[in-house]
Length: 222
Image (cartoon, rainbow, N blue to C red):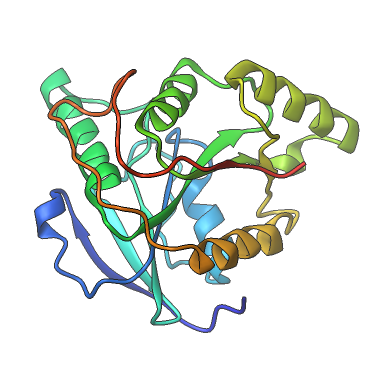
């Protein structure tokens, strides 16, 4: 796949505010300091398509970008560093899961992890929720440039073991220009798959034991 165009479309907080033409969607989520914005910019070969910040938790809405006029990249708020009243954080959780479980055109969710560390409690919780909700996703181990080849291999195994994932995450580094082609291959493969059925969102978010009609595909790269 070659990305020839990438433009910001809109931001929203409620699934019912999604009023865009129906196209395949790919969502990105991870801890607020995991490098999600930089990864999306690297993927589309644009320096400032997604605004980056040194302050975690700046993304508060669901941001949508149109790629090649044929599919959307969806930048979701990060988890782990959210500040504010519990009621506000609960609103963010409902916003995220309302989108993830209700979008009929969602093809794949990319959950970003920091390769340098074992998955945090928030990482593990979100992973378990994705599995319980049977949503299609791909794990990405970001910031791979921070470690050497041997340490990378060890950390991939550690992350896989900690999460109980069937396959190792996909390595990525914006600074080392690593993993972009593999990410593009994921997009290409997912675009060839039939669209999943629309799920039903239960108020309060998808916790352990939540279900969705979407078929779960947990993929990775070794």
